[in-house]
Length: 532
Image (cartoon, rainbow, N blue to C red; front, side, top):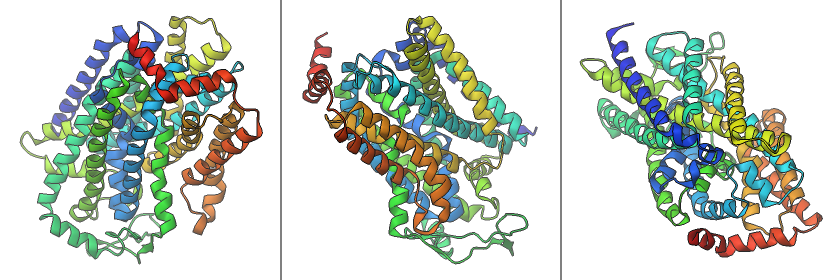
């Protein structure tokens, strides 16, 4: 290992030691009860709520996946995805956050998402709880795999080491950290990691712009590539069928004719924003904030962070195509452009130390997401299936033991999925994102705002939404043409229709459920909590 690589590694080890320190600080409080471990005792302030929600949401996808898409095929795909995410973030904080915070307290002080849905409909047979927990297990296992891929690519690219070994070591670190401190440690470290992530992006984009000769030079290069710098066009790298890599001639990468990026594709891509209404890692932050009145402040903080981070991530991909046009010749390799920029800019003197801390931005993004995914998935099984269905008299200690065992099992499955080093992070994340958005998004909105929603409608919507994600992805979308729509959009619509139709065809909710709804709607529950 060269001196530069050693300095980068030292900086990253220092960062990881800080993260572990946070876990140790919060471990004692987290282990007092399952509510503290899963939801932090509803004690998060507005800054931690906002920053941890967005950091856990974006993951390594922000620093590797999104820049990689922009580098590979240009502005349109990355930009419309970012716009959809920004709009979805704002609407989720504006519409869902307050009502969910209030309703989760009214619904028997629910501390997990499956528990909230189950208590919302006052079910005796825990069908909704079980289904919710199972879907969370399935999609978060896939999500965790994407984070492990990020770890593997990061360390393999930086140090020239074996991808599989680095991926497994990254997974071990994340597991140990998550088991240690629970939700409070996760949220506190996510706050720090959100700052590291946006700082890393800002530093690299400024340095890259200067190195490229200014914004005008970057734009001139981007516009010279057919479809690369268009909102309604898409660049088409020329691929050598024998090698599967982009063709390079005279030191320049070749592109074919630009592809059309029509209105239907724009809507399909912006549908990423719908996913937010069903994202457990974000929704839990709404439930965990200490006061409903602080959500407005959190919304503003979150939006500033999201807009800056997404815009800069897209631009890094655009700049990277000019500075290192032949460095990455496959879509999977393109996701390393952020690493390439960083290691080249900080290659002398004490630069590698700075590079190490910036690389910690990718590690930060990965940890902040994977710990959330593992914790929520494990709690879904331990709290909602083990204690909620299988052993209702289970103690807090037993629940937390099962949680940690489940963490290990989920992580092992995630590692197996992540063994393929050619995995594209963006693709893995997009499928899991669609799964959560379609399964939980429509039922979350309708259960909060439509009194007539029934338990049968909720079950139909969740099963139908999840099933449609798989069906559209595997059967319909491969047909191409007008059918090549991101699976989240049709699955979300299908789920919402099922909920409405089945709810109208079944007996209306009980008087107690309607009273809960009205109390939450009028804000009486918040007044009661404040009085206590």
